[in-house]
Image (cartoon, rainbow, N blue to C red; front, side):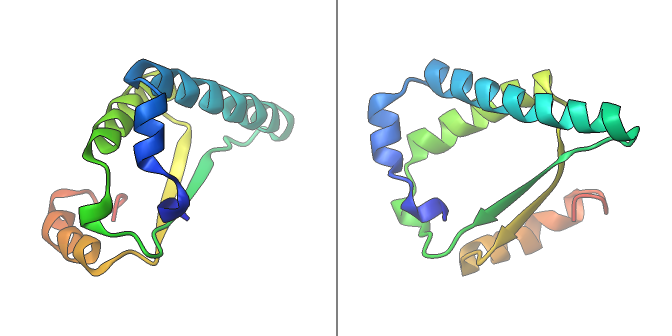
Length: 112
């Protein structure tokens, strides 16, 4: 559950560069496993990300963390453009559902 991560502590103890390096390290490990499976089976294997947003509140989100997370995710997307196959968000708060209704028309059918 995303709400169980102390985002204030992550911001206090990790710089943007350290967070980005952690994401790269984590994704490289995942990539190594998926690459081995792809080579063994001959079928392209991708990662599925599941996010549980139970008890997440917009006002309690650390905006600095969100900015750092976005920057680190962009770097990862540049290094591993095909790693993520799907992302599922469960128990999203009402504000996120409302936001998605507004922005969904701007995404391709594959994203929605």
